[in-house]
Image (cartoon, rainbow, N blue to C red; front, top):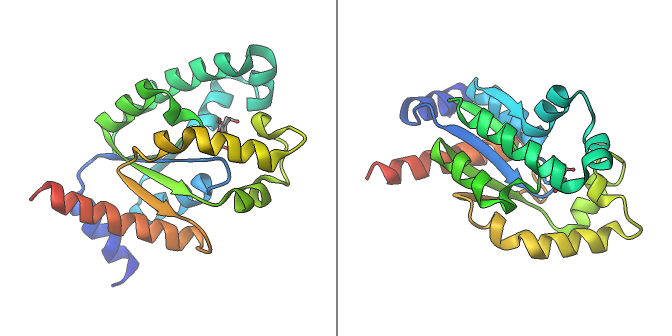
Length: 189
Ligand code: S3P
């Protein structure tokens, strides 16, 4: 099926809900979000980028100045604000789903998609950047495993789970469209 048709089909049946990308750091939410927004002709918003813009500070600076609790407050505020919009792709930060309040507000108006990857893949994908304060530790792999272990039950509450191992962002975006379509069909009985 031509790509434009896949997207057209989805738009027809999938009226106005947001598509929310969740998942651990390095699972590809930003790259996949870009592909998804392009294929569906939807606007992409990135929660972290919008926080950085509104605070005029980087995520690292926010963590340094206000600590993780301060960042989480800003994150919840931004998620509430973005959830009022319709028909957009929202890429969230990896820790956003730990707060039930964030999930509730995102679910009201959106389908939640969680991207997954193995800890070894995540450490490789995140290794070159120093813009993730939680991974600025001596043993990032250990930290990733520990956080993943704690967050697993929160990630698993998503409507759709997608394993990203060995797949391109385009392939993942197409898989998301198929699954959202399937789910939407089921919901309509
Ligand atoms: C975080 C993930 C980051 C960012 C912040 C905290 C987390 O976003 O929100 O550094 O707690 O997992 P990405 O998942 O986009 O890297």
